[in-house]
Length: 237
Image (cartoon, helix red, strand yellow):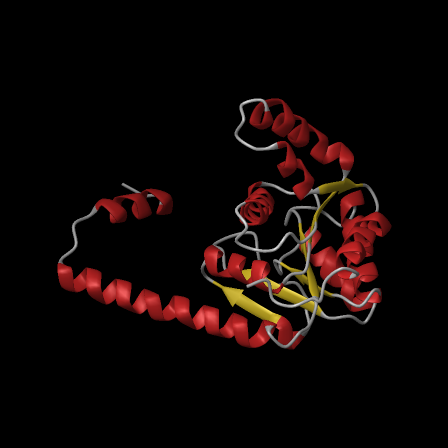
């Protein structure tokens, strides 16, 4: 019988392990996690003020949001910001491409996956970091970004978006700008947040101010500039 890889992982999680096996496996995993933190801190601490651009890895160059992300990346660098993406294809590639064309800093925090993602060619060679752990990667986004620009995406994009909003809502990090690009794409989610989360008192009215929705690259960069004009940019924690 052929065992699917996903089934194998589930069965492995439930299998009994002796103490030595648990201790050895977990101890080495801690060192691997620490090495990713060290690599990320050492690389990103040198790059200066940056904005993270999130969006789908599946967006094709023919898609209008690809071109929009490219414009966002270019305009950010023209305004003095470095661009950080998840390092993969789609929206991430487009933002890195725009930054590269505008001769700005182009950073990629690539996640190693069994499918779908390899680091794109528009990242500066000395600014690409490969991660095995999503949570380490997200720490880097939060620590070294002075703002998030979020274009249409899937589960991964939603994960990053709500991580940022949660940390701001709970005051674990400062209230840096979160800009959703594409009113048509995001309107359904925002309506659900207002009609369901707010009505059920699971968020406060003030939480709706955690993000702004725009349609153009100029508008998105303008939101970042408003924040920049008020605060000295530095790591968020």
